Image (cartoon, rainbow, N blue to C red; front, side, top):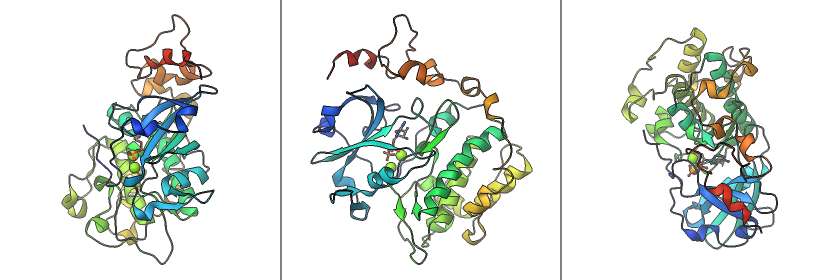
Length: 335
Ligand code: ADP
Ligand code: MG
Ligand code: MG
């Protein structure tokens, strides 16, 4: 299945993306995922071979309202400025930033093997509700933190969350994020239609948190059933919420509350975080990643392959599916 597109940045990146100071410090490797993202690539730091993820942000694609004053007075995209300032275990962190005339080069920590929840879901993980709760509550914690700082993410969905082999998740992609205030309503939606709330699809203005809760509800639904709850815009606005499989009463009640058509009666972040389904106990150490989801060796155990050095020990097994298998020989070219 194909990934739904955010309405924001869909940019083409050429070789110009790596030009400048950035390339003195980083060697750019293959594209992330199946090549759908020309603008997000693996990269390693020349000084210590730390493996990172670089996002190349084309300046001309950044909308006028998405620029802010950076640390040294330069104009920087809000996406970059936010990720530089935010500090939370469930939000990706930025390790470096550079720019040339066309691009900002945002270097992020690489979390796990680079698997996002879209791909995780595509592999039909064998999740039970405690594990599902454990994964999802971390998204809730990230959003709770953001809202406490009056920041709206506005593009919460499976592919904007990355997961590692300890089921630790981080929110990424702040390209649609913005600051909110009590007395300002937004009229433009910047996220992904499939995750947009019925009232906003119907053309109403929004404050923010209620829209974010809806998209979190869609995310939880997709994580639970591996299908979207609504087939199109009309269905989102009018259609009833159906449950393809039996789930616990708590989970069903929570999903109905998060996906309540009326924003005034929709669950709030505070209500979500104190919900019994979210707070249920989880024996997280009893779950083994490669038993829950089919994956290759480097996904099951990325640290075994990537920590310290990128060069494989002789004879160490490298799966053909490993996107970095070829690049591992590259670092012999020293800076
Ligand atoms: P876009 O704005 O084009 O959607 P994203 O920031 O969402 O770009 O990145 C695109 C994809 O790249 C993500 O869906 C994810 O699969 C992968 N990705 C992005 N950042 C990271 C990261 N720090 N670690 C691992 N994978 C990442
Ligand atoms: Mg994205
Ligand atoms: Mg984006």
